Picture 1 (cartoon, rainbow, N blue to C red):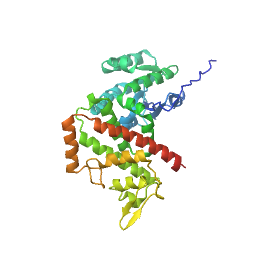
Picture 2 (picture 1 turned 90 degrees about the vertical axis):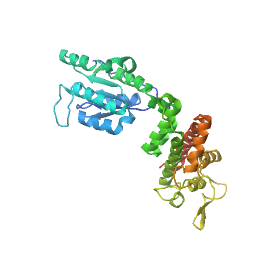
Picture 3 (picture 1 turned 30 degrees about the horizontal axis):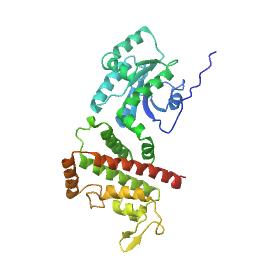
Picture 4 (picture 1 turned 90 degrees about the horizontal axis):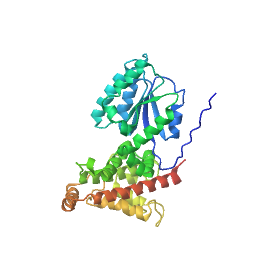
Length: 341
């Protein structure tokens, strides 16, 4: 009897987690999902193609690859369909066209009959064949190819620009996963992609991006409020966070609330250390006097637009984005140290 080889993959804090959709109606008897975790791959199984399409619709931006069974069910409660691969691949191509992005896709099956191999050759023609150098080979056998499939997925996923950015800023995105909303994470990813891949950001709008930086700070203050770090009366209405007051309070400064003065503990004590406080203050005060909203007023927009038009450089905004990365990393460390249960 052959002994199953134990797979040990060295893990470190900079490893990315790759999310993979696996469409297969059968139980995971071979431990594909468990093996995936050893490779930092989070495998989400759908038991029919209809369920898989729902995952694609809701989580496309977070997925790194798709794995298809060779002969799965189309709808819940149905029988395995011999035309499954034809339909799944055809609809994948439509979904990719809608998103203007392609995810690597693979076939994982125990079937090696002549009819199935003919099906594989047919679905693998065209676009998938052209992608083989970038994505790796298409077909893997369930009983012998799981490790190679995991390795292939990691190599292909690492080439995706989103995953490259997430890897470069791993600590920051891990904090955002824990404390920030999906919208905030997507915004930061878009900003950093524009920094590292400017060829894909031809419609870059510096005024919009500066507004987005302030919006991320709003999410930080909301997270601080949820944990009890920032009082409701300081943060203000939940539909319109008072950014200036929130920044002052967390920096250990006095805040005027009606006729009262509120501050964090005693003079000289603070949540934001001085450097973090200065970064947050700079992002909030540049070109904007409105403390109650993330939107720039007309004068603020003009100031930033004039700066951009005169210099034709995005370094001003990207510099603040990089500073904000450190603010988020610091926030995560502080929250885990002082507010974790």
